[in-house]
Length: 412
Image 1 (tube, rainbow, N blue to C red):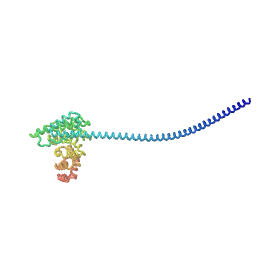
Image 2 (image 1 turned 90 degrees about the vertical axis):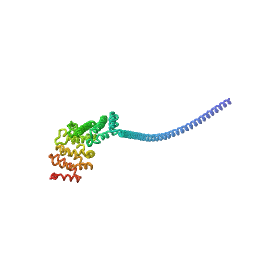
Image 3 (image 1 turned 135 degrees about the horizontal axis):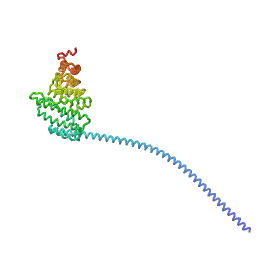
Image 4 (image 1 turned 180 degrees about the vertical axis):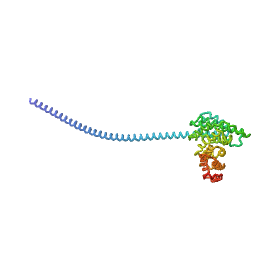
């Protein structure tokens, strides 16, 4: 009994020891877990700290990258703008180069056409050349090419290069041949202007000048027919309405330039010359002769005003100046005033050749003599202005003025 009890007590004691051992183990385990938890906490806190640092680094990197990307984008935008500008400039440059290339090609083409035309003139007679030009001018496309190549000034020079009535040995056969050439050249010029007219006045002024040229040829033909028998040329219809219309258009500068461009100075001077040759210089001419001379002179007054080129061309035509001087002694005072205005323009700031031509024709002597016989104050003023221009820088003209009988009475 006592032994069993003791055994039970031992067992209980062992059991208590086992439980205490288990508790110690559990405590040790708990300590291990606690240590493990502490380690985990430490590691987690370090991990968190590391992540925060990483975030700061990442945020710094991202901000740096964003600023870098902004800089890159600005650089890209500037480079794009520069590229666009460069592209635009290069495109403009290319266009300009293309335009220059087109202009060069056009000029080369024009020069080639003009060279071929000159070769055609060398290889053929003037009659054949005029026919070919007239045939070519029937095409509107060719008319544009011909005008661009400078055919119009060349045609005008060919038509007005030499006045037929200046030639003393001209006969009817030569006149007919020259008239045929002029007809073809005038038709070619008319076709070119018709198909390429740049303003509404071009064709109108050209038509008037062409009709005046035809009037000159008609009168010249009649003059040659009656020259052998010394009879008076019968009167023909004078284009007075045409010359008056042309004078009315002289109020505009553009019309004056077109008259000069189409050779109107030569044609109008020929009108005055041939009318004087055919109908004489009577002091009381018929109404048509008087009107066509008066309005022709007034047109020349407008065209020669402040125009050195026209003055030099007209002042060098000795035959025309001789007709004006002869008309001074045969015309009424209105016509004398118109003649004095033309001479006044021609003698103002003129060149040496024109001044020498008027000096050779004794223009000062004739003007002074005429001035002593006129009564109208406006006519006297025009004559004095012309004399002042002629004697201003010429001792010879001053001497011619003083030699005229009664010239000193002008200053009394």
